[in-house]
Every structure is written in structure tokens, then in C-alpha cells.
Image 1 (cartoon, rainbow, N blue to C red):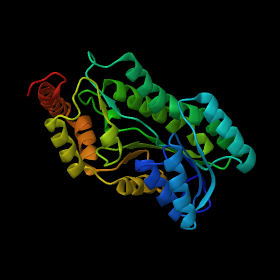
Image 2: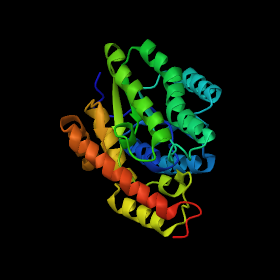
Image 3: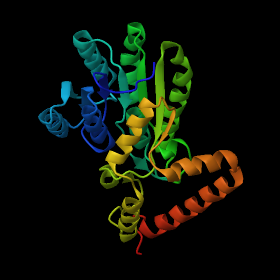
Length: 288
């Protein structure tokens, strides 16, 4: 069942305290949604909740939680569903960004990327989707992957493992849930100017290096705003669109990837060589 408006729809959103999650929560509230919000950052979550309520938005539930903790998500789902019934829309937006070449990535970084970016959404789907199915009201699921869930970007092995995994889950659910009239959107952002730019982990790299500062400056210049990304997500829900892009460059590269495999491979090789050059200039211990 296609959702033409979020007015009166119960929307559960992870990562609601900042970045794309915060912008999407605010945009959904402006569209009349009833919001059920969570984030690991209790202070910022309280801030966005107060801001939305202050503007007349409906937030029946807001509670800090770590989505990587299955028991925490399970408890939250039980509490919400006992009081408010099934959700109409699930939005898996929370995530972290960890980069590094395979020889530099630590085991705990691999685990954190998978546990938060992949298992977190799995926990949400596992705890909320069955009730949506039982309610027989249809609905929609949004899984925020990444351009790194489409392309083999340099230094993204751990991050891409989580985002390609979420893409795979979405591809299956896209067909599995159709019989229940539950739509699925896979969101693949490129550059979005969020707090992740400042908290990005790049193992083996001096993030205070001038070359990294220049890299971040260029990224911000090319990136879209969280508000623009949120607008694309809500449009994707209402159009019942599976692949949702937040910027034209990623949409174009995805098209090139499918139509012209050799140019795509050459682009990826160029990016890899470029990032290796950055690594050599910014690696910890470099005198440059």
C-alpha cells in the first residue's frame, strides 16, 4: 500500500539526534507524522525532540538506545508496540563511518562497523516488522545504505561490508514484503555534510594532516545538506521507490556501473590511486 502522505503515520526513526536522521525526523514531523525516535546520544535526542514538539510536531516516544544492542531494541519495540501498536514506517538511518586499508583496520573496527551499520538495522527489522505484517496495514521500510553499498570505494572494506549487507537485505525484503503491501526503499547517499565528516575514523591516517583538512573541505563543497537528503528520502517513500539517491553524481555513477563496466573500473582505479597518494602524504609518521 503506497504511502502518499506521512500525515498520521507512525514513523520509527533511528539516528534521529543528528545529521540525516535529525533532518528526516523534522521533515516527517512537518508532514504530519507521529514520531518514535531513538539515538545513542541522549542529550541531542532530547534537543531534537523538544524542537519538534515546540513546533507542534507529534513525538509520542523518544528514548536513547544503542541499536547494536539487540535486547535494548527488543525492549524498546515491545514498549512502543504495547502502547501504540504497529509502526507504519521504519527508517534505519543510524550509522558510523570507519575507513582504512585492510592492512591497517583493527578487528574492533570491523566489528563496530558491522554491529552498528548492519546488525543495528537487522535488530530493528526483527523487532518491528513482524508486527507490521500482523497488522495488515501495509507500510514502508527505509534502509540508509551508502554509495559505498554500490561501489568498491578505496579504504571502505569494513564500511562497505556493512552497507553492501544492508543493500542485500533490502533487495530480499523488497520482494518478500510486497505480498504484505510493505514497500522498501534503499537510500544510497553520496556526500552529505553531517557530523560524520568530523568524527570519521581513518585508521593509519593523521586526521590533522593538511591534506586531510583539504580533503574534508572539498568533500563539504561537493556534499548535499542533510535537509536535502531528508527531502529525497520522503519523496522516495511517497513514490514507493526502491533505489533512492540523494545526489545526481551517485545516480549517474550507478548507471555507468551497470552500462559501462570498463569505464567504471577505470574510475575506481583512479580513485584508488588518488587515495593512496593521500595516504602516503597523511599517514601517521609521515614527514610530509
